[in-house]
Image (tube, rainbow, N blue to C red):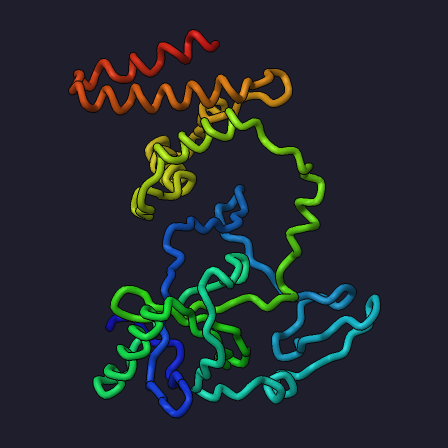
Length: 292
C-alpha cells in the first residue's frame, strides 16, 4: 500500500483484539493555493514574529499562552502541554452499537480507512465487518491519537471498514436557533405534489464523479489565459452566471414547477426520438425567450 498509516493499534470487542492500521480516506488535491506577492518586485511576502515596541523575536522565545483576562496570559511550556496529552493506548474499544441513522450527519467529521495489520488479523476483521453488515449497526467508541481523544464510528465499507471521527456535542450549534423563525404553515398540496413528482423524476444513484469543482476549473483556465496574455489583465463577464435579481420579479412557484416538469418531459422525448443534436439546444431556448 502506497499510503502511510497514521495510526497502528487494535480494535477490541470484548475479549477479541484485531490488529489494524488507519489511513486517511480523503485528500486535498482540488484546491489552488495563492501566495501574497509584492507587485513592484514580484517577490513573495514573508512574515516575521514581532512584539509591539520590541520588534522581531526568535522562535525559541515564543511559548503558548492562554488569555485569562484582557492582556493577561497564563504561559505554558511545550513540555507542560505534552504532559497532559492522553497516551495513545493503541486500542479502540467498541462500547456501543447503534443504527447509523441514530447519528446526526452534523456529527460526522473526517473519514479513515481501517485495514487489518497482517494476514492473521484478517479473519477476525472480516467477521466483525460482516457482523456489522448483518446487524445493520455502527460500532461507537473512543480513540486516542496524536495526543487527542476522538469519538469514532466504525462501519462496513465495501470489502473493508470505514472509521469516521465524530464531533463532540459541545462543538455543534443547535439547529433550533437557526430555524425558529420558520413558520408552521403547511404547503399547498398541489405544489407539494408537483415538487414530489420533480424529485421522483430526478431520483438516481449518487455518482461523485459527475461533480467537480467548477470554481477551481475556472481558476485553472484563467491562469492559463494569463500566461498566454503575458501578464495582461483578464476579466471574465461577471453576469454570465449571475442569479436572477431578487425582489424585482415575483416568481410564480406553480408556473416554475410546471415548466420544470415540462422540460423534463421534453428532454426524455428528445432522447427517444433521436433528433439531430444541433436542434436540441434551440428547442430548449424557445420557452426561455417567451418567459423573458
